Length: 227
Image (tube, rainbow, N blue to C red; front, side):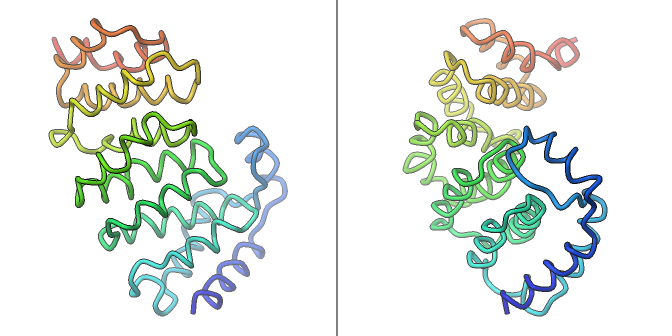
């Protein structure tokens, strides 16, 4: 079932590849991944046909399907895997977090990590909060930069449910990082949380030594929110 469904997707993608688009899309991702040149609106249309295939969305969460899409060369297949993950988020279980870690650390770049961290990882951590101490705490200080970024961002959509202490802990643990993607993640996480608790974020930023990029990004909504 998985193979036949992915064969259909592969056929649809190949029929709609666009070499004129492929090179600029590759360049936008700093040359890290090849592309078929299928822009997002068309890709989403083609994905609809894939997701109508019998059993694709009706089965329990299918790691094999995601792994096969992740293994393909062109980036559009990873994007379809991310769409599938989002559609199956309510079926994810505690043990699926280790699989999310594999995805975060494979073919890693901001486009995939930023979809996995606040969506499937965030959902698993919300349903099974024990995984934060068991696993995500370790991500926050991991040698792998993308796992650290995922730890900082997994609560991005939590709003009032944000564990503020944990968010600030992870930021402090990474505050001296020279990595652009860590500094940017810190700013993004603070900016999002400032929509919920601006006064807390202001106090944190003023009391913590952060990279200028993190401060700039994290402060974007503060003046507006505290008027």
